[in-house]
Length: 201
Image (spheres, helix red, strand yellow):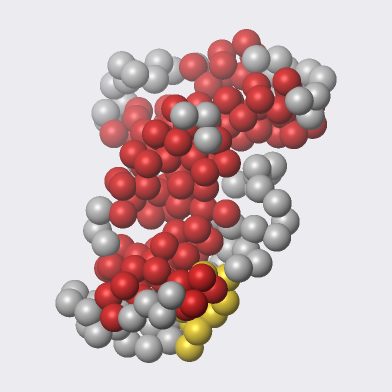
C-alpha cells in the first residue's frame, strides 16, 4: 500500500548486494535463485560466514520487505525467506506487535508489513497494522503533522477493512466476533474521516 511511512529517505544506505551463491545449509538446497543477496555492511565487517551469513541476509531481506513493501523483488525475497524459516511471518508478527505496544511505531510498521508480505491472508496482521497506523496518526497530530497523520489514518482504515473482509471469508460469511462488520467505517468516521473517504483537516 502506498502512503506515508515513518523513516528517513536514506533508510537503505547501509545495505549492499552480493552475487548469488547456492546456500550450503540444511533445507536450502532447492531455495529460489535470486539476482543478488542484500546484506548490511556491518555484517560483512564482522565477517559472518556459513549459516550466520544467510541469517544476516534473511534479516536484511526482512528489513527491505518492511521498508519497501511495493518493490518488485519482494515476491522472490518472500519465496526465499519462507524456505529459510517457515516461522518467520509469525515471529515478525509478534515482534512487531510488541514494538507497537511499546510505542516504537516505525519498527512496528516495518516488521508488521514484512510479516504481511510473507503471510498476506493473516487478518490479525492487517488488524494490528491498522492499530499501529492509528497510533502513528495520533502521534503525528500531536506534532502538528496533519497531512502525514491524515495519510496514516487512511492506511489504518484500509487495513481495518482488509482484516474485516479476511475474517468474514475465514468464517464462511458468518458474523465475525472480533471484527464486527462496519468497524472500519466507524473507526474512520470517529477519527475525523468523511463519508466520501477523505479526512477532515
